[in-house]
Image (cartoon, rainbow, N blue to C red; front, top):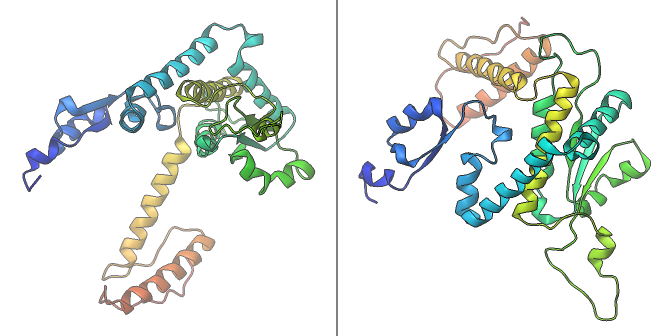
Length: 305
């Protein structure tokens, strides 16, 4: 492509919110290569937006992504129209509220029996815990009941050899099994009426393809929202995440001031954080000096704040 930025920009595209579109064009990416995203769509709910469409379509093809969207759409319609007593997201949400707020179960494990869903539990972990890990209602009142669970999981065969011992004989932990009638690698041995996949699954409920993956993802998204509705919390904000970013920025500024020529000692921290940060700064500062990257003297911090 050479050094011509105009040529380089023809090979770039961007996914960005509408409020960030000006920065995208200022960077040099034309508007016709901008895939927009609504400002009100949070990252954990954005898989069906352009943020998911662009990479998934490039990797698997537009037909596969269309099938994925069709599956998600079918679950959206089910959630919207199915009666409550047969509504899967509602029933799963009610079960979650029962297990958390009434039974007091603090954890929930998600166990997909398909290697293709290796990262699915981690995605649902972010979806559920970032959405419903709150302590105030939508009106700002303090929540007076238990809400939210610690979600974790692994593909079933991995989990069996890591934490299933606890599930079988230790703490009570609600478990959600995700299985598929058709294996990714079907293998039948002549003369054996039951194959290994039969033993593993005993016939669960769907096929492992883009359509049903879209259904499952939408099911869990709607379940998360149902739980939030029941608890009267906002499942679509993330003040804890923003607070973490703010705190990290403050810590970074304190580190920067310490490593300036004035070597300003950290301040405004609780004693535990102060001691840990002071030790880290002193030790890392010493290592940096040995590497010849800074030229000011290391400062020993002796006084607590």
